[in-house]
Length: 325
Ligand code: FAD
Image 1 (cartoon, rainbow, N blue to C red):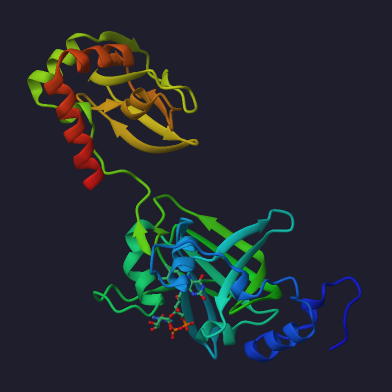
Image 2 (image 1 turned 120 degrees about the horizontal axis):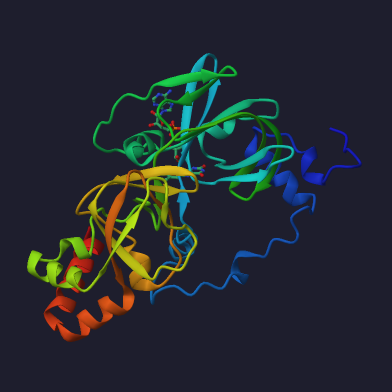
């Protein structure tokens, strides 16, 4: 294969035959910059296998989970991958990293199309399935076909891309794909962190709303009543949170980044977390109908917690329950 003058040396390497071209890359001196393994300093737990400590270090980076799909002799092959990243908007490029030992690796080559399905939090069983992990038998995967490429049905987002370049990546190979099709839906993504699946959202439920009724009523009686017209914004995403609210009458919409994520009604609290930690609001709350609500400022809540140790302890218990999930 002749070398293109404008391309880095790794572009000369054929893909699909991992061990030989990886060896070729090494012998060509293209990877001299890679440090020998013994130059890697790993500070793990005492007595911990350094290889495991390295994996655990990398596992601290939280990701979503995708299923990469392709076809081989009219058969669909899927593989779970979290080593997926967006690379460029113009041209639209994405990158995946595939283990040289994976069956998927042998199926990919330049010009081949791949599907990327971003899994939703309900699709954990499918992630296990396409990772070849034994587990409770989930539903059979079904696929929709776009640009002659299978995509996992019900995923949060879909991409179809054609592989344009591949790169040596040690025991993995990196495949850069030019995106031809993209589609997203609504919902929460499946997350992967520290070797476990995780959820984006904290467990549902209000902190102040979970207080025993007499405590809650005492707290609310210290608040101020506010009214809002339909369409009026009660709290703005990005603003510093100073107050929590409980709805007396009417309904409100919670909108994050322009997307409606919840509807609230009488008795429901909102704005509590930003009120407690003083950080930015993570969503807008907009009155859907004329709204009457009680606002509790941080100072009011602080005073109540100082004067009533039982109340403060109860709030801690509620928070502990939420962390335990
Ligand atoms: P196999 O192991 O043969 O197949 C994978 C599984 O998918 C098998 O159970 C197979 O039955 C099933 N399957 C395949 N096609 C179909 C189909 N059409 N219908 C029904 N079932 C089907 N590895 C990487 O290389 N890169 C990564 O980024 C990566 N990220 C991961 C992230 C997570 C969260 C997990 C759990 C694993 C990850 N892996 C990754 C590991 C990888 O998913 C597994 O090693 C996988 O088994 C490799 O698949 P394979 O191509 O060798 O095919």
